[in-house]
Image 1 (spheres, rainbow, N blue to C red):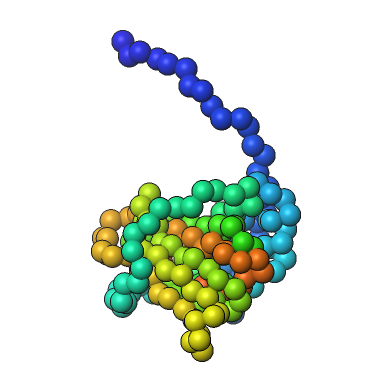
Image 2: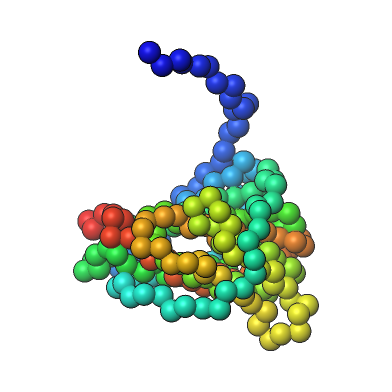
Length: 205
């Protein structure tokens, strides 16, 4: 007989959530979901967000120079957002496949915008700063494996950094790209690819 125990749960918190459908010129369809505790933060993000999404046939991602070092996730803010992107229709392209994304939002000081991808095996993303200063981290599973800071004060024409896993995995895992604003009204672009594993599914209807 196992020893059953009661648990002490945290107080209940109400999250705000918004969902959008996106279709590209290839008639590929995607579901974008944005969640957060702060209603105004969710509304600001979905109002300003611009993006492009595409599904491509699988090929191994090219290796990139690793930037940054391992690090810990910063403390959560009530304005933090979780963003998930899933392909729900891509005719004639079966898993595994590449999910390519280009995302252009703004972010406030101290806020984390966490882009989450499940059932993945490879990932690579380039972050470019268009305003202010930003910290970017790549999380594989529960571990931060790569990070970098970009800002418009670097003197570079395109201040950017590319993050990818230190080791590639053939097993299905999860990746998160976490962007943290270090100044109010910062702006950035994410351009990247994640490889969805052979076990990933989407509706072909």
